[in-house]
Image 1 (tube, rainbow, N blue to C red):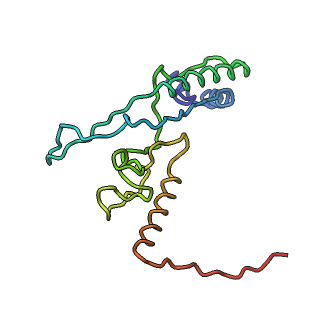
Image 2 (tube, rainbow, N blue to C red):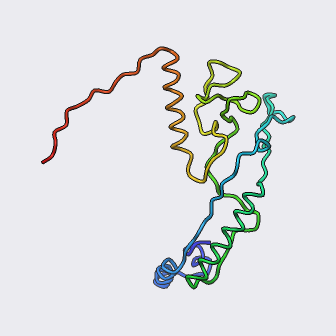
Length: 184
């Protein structure tokens, strides 16, 4: 619970609210670990036996946190505890054991690779089974690091677009250059 929510829950309002909020904001720290999840072929989306209203199979997620990630959580918790000790920290609160939520970097489900048996698209996002179908999203990334995947997704999309243009023999326009004057 953050400082504002805690004060409201405690019934603190008015000038005392501002005083307490300033104090707590200057004396609290929130540290978060974001753990790398290694690629695992067992973590995947398949079609389930259940069908939607139109008779199309629903997706079914298969996902498990591996030992590498679980150990990473334990190590980071110990590191955070030690940092708090060194800073004189008190009232430490940790995420619930086994809680690995709050990762918004959506990737996978249409993994990129060379082998149609283990991937959906090739290195340019072309599906292995449809020559004229390209997937341009973070969904083609087989795994995600702890950083945001948006820029990588954009880079992949631009690369795919360039590949499609080259394969179509479409010439891309060259931007006009402007003469810039040097500053003295």
